[in-house]
Length: 320
Image 1: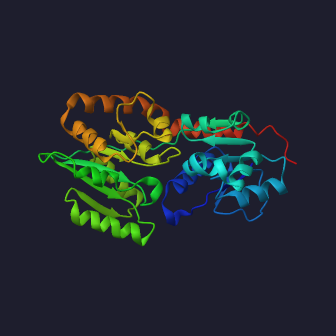
Image 2 (image 1 turned 45 degrees about the vertical axis):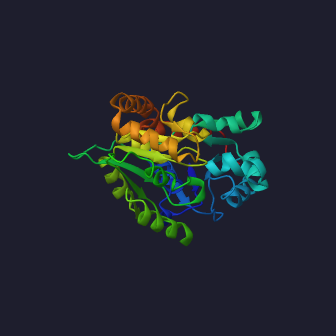
Image 3 (image 1 turned 45 degrees about the horizontal axis):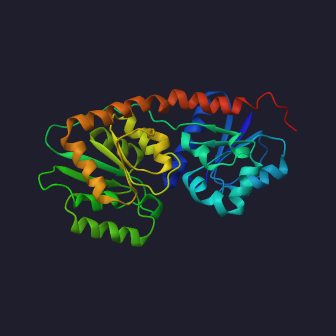
C-alpha cells in the first residue's frame, strides 16, 4: 500500500506537526508500507492519505477526496483545529466531513466533535523514546518551557511567574523555541532583561531539546489551546513532571485528577505550583507518580501499534 502523509510544515520548522509526521512515517515504513511525506499533495497516485491539520491541509484533503472518493482518507486534528477552526472555518469543517477516519491526540479531543464525527474518530497518543535523566548535583531547579513563541502557546506565562517565586528559590526558567515574529523576539529579550530567572535560548535542534530534558526538574506547558503536546510525551519519557494550564488538551494528556494544573493565564498560581514542586517533596513525588502512570499511554511501541492498526482498518478495502 502506498501512503501519502501530508503535514503543513516541513522539517525546517521543527514543530510538533513535523515531528508527528516523521514519526508516523517511520512507524508505517517499519510496518512494510511505502510512505511519502509532503507539505502538499502533488497528485501522484496513492492508496491512502493521512493529513495532519484539517484547515491547513484542506487543499490536499479536498483534492484527494475528489480524485479518489473511495480511497481511505485520514485526518489528524491539531489543537487549533479542535479548539478554534472546526467551530467556524468552512475548510476545516469540510475536511471533517470528507475524512473516513479522524484522529485526535488525547482523550478529551473527542469531546469537541459532533456525534457523527466522533463515531469515526480514533485516539492515538503521541510518544517519545526513553530519555536517560542525568540530573546534576547542586541546588539549581531547572524549569523548561519548550515551544515556538506564538500566541496560542501563551509563551511568557512561566517567565511572568518567575517574578512571584520566593526570594530563596533556586528555580530558573529555560525557554527553548523560535520566535515566530519580531514582536515575540523583542518581548523575549525584554523579559530576559527584566526577569533574572528567565533565559530564552531560541530555536534548538531536537537533540539539544532532549539534552535539556535530561537535566530538567520540571516542564511548564502554558498553552491556551493544545491538541496533545508532544513535549509532554518527551517530559514523561525523561521522568520530568509537568505543570500545565488547565485546558482540555492538557487534561486529556495528563488526566482529570492530575494535581499540576493552574488556571490559564494565571502566573501567580503557576508560581505557587513551581514553588511547591521545588520545595514540597510530597507534592513533587505525586506529580512524578502520576506522570509515570501516564507514560504507559505514550510509548513508541504503543503509538506505532495504534498507527499501523489505524491503516490496517482499510487494508481489506478494495481500491477503486
